Length: 139
Image 1 (cartoon, one colour):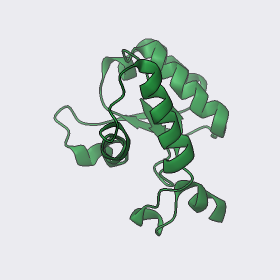
Image 2: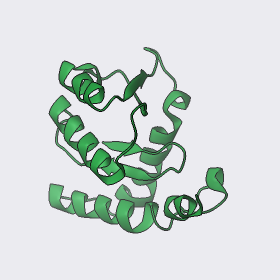
Image 3: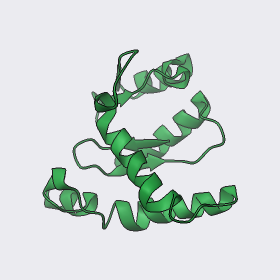
Image 4: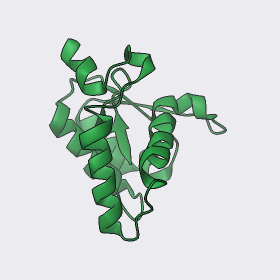
């Protein structure tokens, strides 16, 4: 699961879990919060998975004065374009290139892709053909 800064395309929080429980989502969200320390009023967009609608998750958002925004029930991929685009790239540029056989291999591959390529190197047309890190350094 990932939390992506929609403006810069920077993956600010991520984790690889066997299941995506509310506790897993909250743990990943807390990593993103620790990394960025966003101000109150941050809008967090997600699908309507049960983990994102759970009391624990909503309480965590409330504690930080964040707002939730959800896709519609019969949403199309364009309602969560940043997430859909990132996960498509992750599959095409990382996972399908060398299929991991274990959780550890998968975690290492994904870590390397996000932290050593996607955030600091991979360019995006939507942010003037620079990487998320470069784009944020311009701000």
